[in-house]
Every structure is written in C-alpha cells, then in structure tokens.
Amino acid sequence: MVDLGFPELLTLVQTVAIIVAIVIAIYFSRRQIQALSTDLEARVMNDLDEKLHRMGEIFMEKPEFVRVIYDTPEAASAEAAFAYYVLFFCAHCYHMRQRGILGDNEWAGWLQWTRNAFEHGRLRTYWKEAEMQAWVDPAFREFVNREMLRPADVAKSGGSSSRR
Image (cartoon, rainbow, N blue to C red):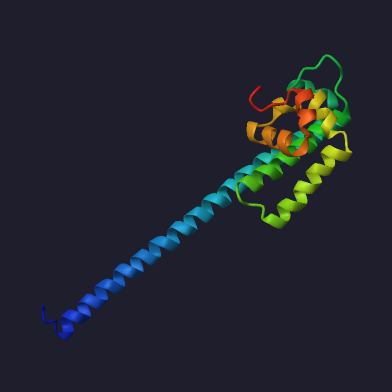
C-alpha cells in the first residue's frame, strides 16, 4: 500500500473536487441548453402562429382572398375562413403539447375546448366536407381522426392519415 502524506492527500482531494465540479457544471449546462432549445422552438412556433393568425384575420375580413391558397369553384364564406382559423388554432395547441410547452392542466382545458368545437360546432362538418385534412400535418390529422371523430365519421370521410 502506498503511504500518502498530507500534501499528496490534499492534492488528490482537490483533484477529485475539481472533477466533480466539472461534471456538475456540464450536467447543469446541458439542462440549460435543453431549456433554451425548447424556449427557442416555442418562440419560432409562436411567431409562425402570429403570422397565421394575421392571415386568418385577413381571410375573415375578405373571404375571397382564401382563393389565393385554395381555389374553390364557389365563393369562400367568412364562416369557412373562420373554421380554418379555429382548426389552425387547435393544431397550434396540439403542437405546443407535443413539444412539452403546455402542461397537463392547460392541455386538459384546450383538449376539452377542441372536443367541444368538433362535437357542438360545425368544425366536424368542415373537417369532413371541406377537406381540411389536407391543410394540417399528419400528426394532427391522425389526432383529430383518433380523438375528435368517432370511427364511423372517419370511415365516412375517408380521413385516414395514411391516405393524404
């Protein structure tokens, strides 16, 4: 066994303490970077949502502008423009939940709000008849078909996420 004197033992303890401090600093730095990454992603999503929000306002003021992105043979109504606006709002809430930005309590409230819009409003009708599925990402499309619509409604609309 090696006989360590006080100076050698002190040097060894200092070395171990420095290594532990570095490991702790790296751990907390990684957590900070992950938090910044989530924060940046949320800011980008909110910025895009604000732009989409402004487009929705324009479409509701002048429904004929909807034809810029979706040229339908019949004139677009303000109600249809608002239905898309509500759908994009629901999709934004869903994406915020996917990214871990909305907590369980907030998500439960928005999930119920979205269910109410599909069950008690005309959003279900627009989803099925206006082919709204084509305007959302596959994950949200699958979520709506699985959580908001009854299986019979999905079969009638042909709204499987693998079809589009």
